[in-house]
Length: 187
Image (tube, rainbow, N blue to C red; front, side, top):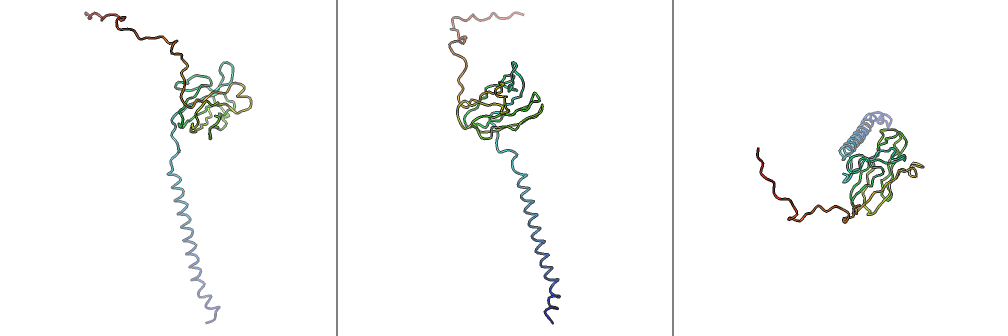
């Protein structure tokens, strides 16, 4: 048998081996891709849980552009002071309330710059860890907006009360200064 005849006879076997190897390689590649996709889908949707959350909407307050607090202690306040304790994860949601492009930036913290919200109702959320104690400004970085009034403060750490304890009315009374017991009811 000549070499040519032997090569012709072995060609189908070689082709079969090559096809099997290709099939196995493709199968392994598809299985690997499927496993990677499954691992990606089972990952948690977020790597944080905020300790403190604030929602700010954009608008006008006293004729000036402002961030306006929504809900809780900051509801309705223009450029409210936001408060967090050191180490807390802070979430700030910005809602466009006036159909003008805005964003929010908090100095000193990585990840504390939102996307631009450029239509009414659009929202953007920033999340960051307040890992530095102090008072930090937040503002809108759109040119002219900070100067037009869109700025406030984030206080990280102990907040000193705005009230002077001596100015507050004392409601404590000595026991002998209280009225006597009420008379029993007669019905």
